[in-house]
Length: 168
Image (tube, rainbow, N blue to C red; front, side, top):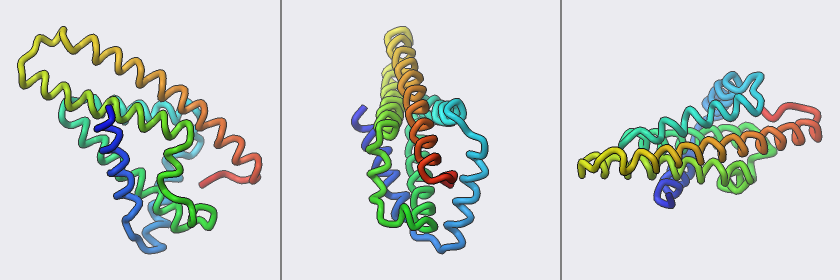
């Protein structure tokens, strides 16, 4: 699990280092804003679970996780470029929130299972030996991401009320 979490964090960190012009940052921020219009905790959960379930795909899932981490880092970079509020915030601090920790845990678990499934398939182990463990891990990821979405939504609601405006 730790290897998957580290891979996600490294990809996220790499994404935050991408230099973009003000125009590119505004465009990326605008695309992100379109994707989250009207989102609530269920939307956050569905978005996160779709990504996480993709990360369970043998072999490909690790790539999906790395791409997701990198893309998330780029979005943070665009937001920091266009928002004075985030301009001095360290990028990894966002992932140290309760929901950020939960998401990194879930994505790390999914990405590591992707790698283990490749190993087990190459070794031609009977599928029953790893199917139950995989299903249990999927269940854990679902529960963790649902709880994370609830927490994230509550924090978004609180922040929006304090500032009388949406985040994006």
